[in-house]
Image (cartoon, rainbow, N blue to C red; front, side, top):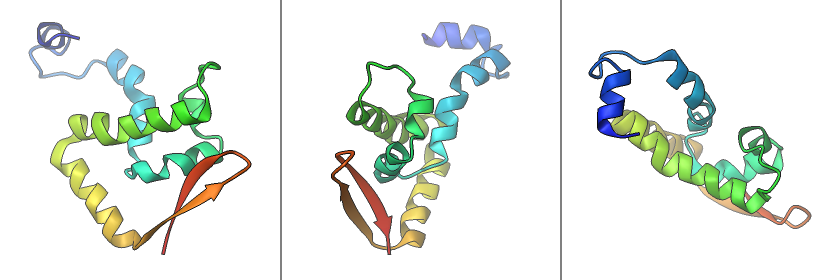
Length: 112
């Protein structure tokens, strides 16, 4: 969407259209995870299939899309406030460890 289109549907950036919020809700929900390293965990639990229901997508594609949302989309939408929550989550969760799930062929993350 262009800046002009955005300006028009938001009454010069003073309103948030419900139709836009409804369309963006699935991405907003993924932003709650904050940590892109958890996308493998979300896939392993079957959560990403609800957010990316396209049957042509494989687990690797869903994990990649999840990471893109958390690394780019969420930070663009929520800015520095989102980034500080990400940093705080890393500080609170401790050291990250990667775990390989052979059966599903994906990496999950645990924190110590």
